[in-house]
Image (cartoon, rainbow, N blue to C red; front, top):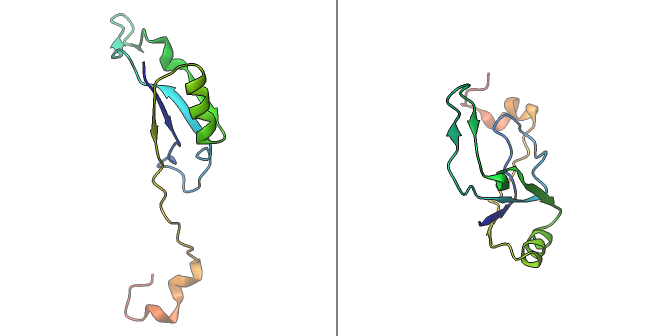
Length: 101
């Protein structure tokens, strides 16, 4: 059972960076999920899928995995540069010839 250590990406429905600052350790699934035939629920017999640990830094997460002998993979985050955009830029003089409204 291999654990993944990563920094979660932001949700597609949010523009901010909430809940993306901590590092997460979670296990990769050992078995595929199955559909329960009577009610149609999706279930899993994998108990490690319920474990999700949060850490302040990547080093803390790696140290935890090494201390307990958990094999792990570290996924580095892909940081995108944030541009400062102001509403007044829509009406700036440098936008001559561009569609503004």
